[in-house]
Figure 1 (cartoon, helix red, strand yellow):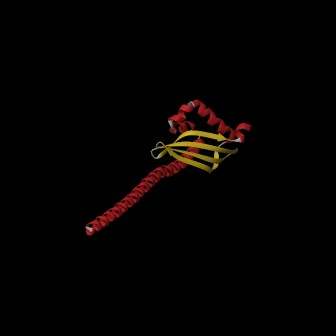
Figure 2: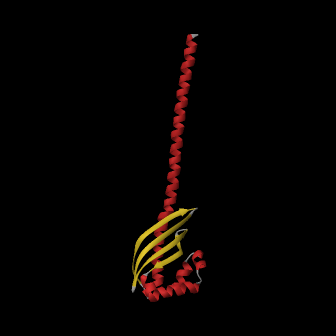
Figure 3: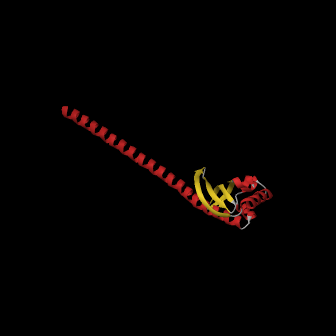
Amino acid sequence: MASFLYDAVTETACTLKLRALTAQSMNTTTRFLGLLTCLALFVSGCSGMFKGKGASDKAVAEFHKLYNDGKIAEIRAAADSKFKNAASEKEFSDFMGAVQRKVGKVTNTSSAGFNVRTFNLTTTAVLQQNTTFEQGNGNETFTFEMNGEKALLVGYNISSKELIMK
């Protein structure tokens, strides 16, 4: 009888150890899978952000090229529908015409900062530029939304003392 009791106690102790090891193994596996999921979400989110910055930099360069060439209608035509709905073609043309008359063509621009974020599967990039024109300086803010691999203009703002004073 003592032998049977010993075997039952030993078996119960072994079963409890096995259950504890199994639970610990499951916790480790769960943590590992959670970490992999977080990493996958981080990498997929960042890839859109990296693409957003690069595409937006190219879009700023294209904006300045079209601006210097006097192709204001083409800037608006390439923009997102949100941009087009914010102002009529005539309003945008008049505004950019005033910028061209008062400060002239872009001679140099440099990045003053950027913010790229993805929310609800939409990547938005905001680029701030310190821009030198022929007749003054300005701080430009460009807002883009990614559409595939292309950054589409949804907002443009320029702040320049020369625009006000001239």
